[in-house]
Length: 189
Image (tube, rainbow, N blue to C red):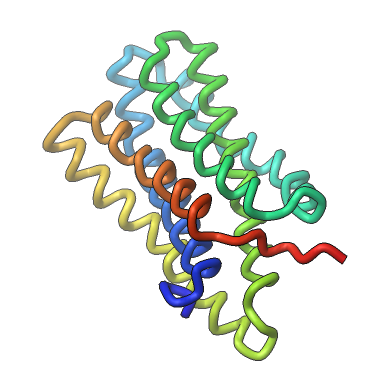
């Protein structure tokens, strides 16, 4: 049900997988990409740190925001912001713009991370919510491994930049999938 049958739960699961797949790729390939661009270890560390810092800070607000504006918008646009941020990072060539791209990557992740769990709570009935959350977390957390594995293979075959560009398609497609298949899960009172 959580993997495919329920259109909302399957959209949530795919978005969770895509978000963490992107993380598995980013943690492995960002240092290699920025080193190839000639950045020092300190500057690479700064860019790589901006992403989770923005994610951690902004998710303090996006979870509550999803209670006001709904879940679907934040999930769809958050997935698209993640994809566009990855592509942006590949097309710019300055430390400042890479920091901006990393910050937007964090904002996109912050838009979806707490919102996906809130949407799970909206959809899954209390009697089977724990089981459904377990299936969701299986898909979400397996994204780390899939992302690292996929990114490694793509980087070996096509290069690091192409691997990042191709992996960015997954969150973009998850946003499209949620846009088409998912209903708004927040019930207005």
